[in-house]
Image 1: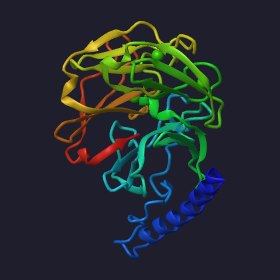
Image 2 (image 1 turned 135 degrees about the vertical axis):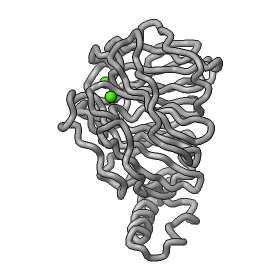
Image 3 (image 1 turned 90 degrees about the vertical axis):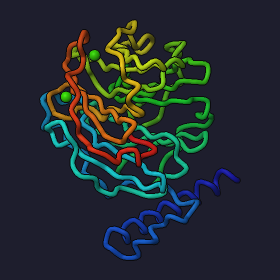
Image 4 (image 1 turned 60 degrees about the vertical axis):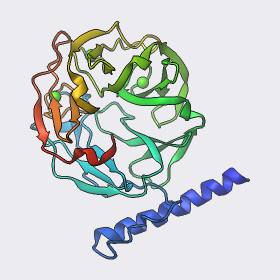
Length: 303
Ligand SMILES: [Ca+2]
Ligand SMILES: [Ca+2]
Ligand SMILES: [Ca+2]
């Protein structure tokens, strides 16, 4: 009974939040925007259009918009310019305060994001961009202190999900193609040495999706994808040192539309940098390029 009524409340709240966002965008009641509605459902819907991967050099390389959520729970979106940078931000949603992790996912393997996984408390939800109500994927997800989706890691073509628990074990969940997930596979241990995990697509030029991990000493490591979901990563190789200058690493996919995924890094002063992927595992990134001058520390979450 309690769960059923909870789902109904979420459904109603989603409609209310969408209405409030629409009102804000047409310039009425700018101070309201449903910011004080504790039960309102997070909404995403009026941001930048998701980029179309058909224009890309390699159609399967993800080219996602980048989202940021600030401390007031407002979501903003940025589209890649295609030249390595990001467009000006567009307000994209409200009521994201209770959400502690969000990941975009491409369900079709065509390089375009179709929806998001989001975690609120211990509940993981999935929501297509074109619907207003999320579907519950599962409970108990608060055992993971990091969730990351580097794209498809084996099995069917959809993007998959990794979770790291407090013991440092890494688990893989395969996506059925609709945001729903298989049971988990343990794919590693000792991952609690890392303070950042990031990846979205192929960095090394072999068509298999890769992951990068920064350890507490500031070393960035490459985990080259194998395409085998039972052992999705090869042994790590060192990319470089000094990465502790950053407090956030995230990949939205391919920023400069050359078919190789790229990395976004936010420094402690709030500037944003891009590292364009080379397709070469031995030296996977070019020298960094600044793509945001300041203020990016306003975002509690980026995805
Ligand atoms: Ca898959
Ligand atoms: Ca690769
Ligand atoms: Ca690129």
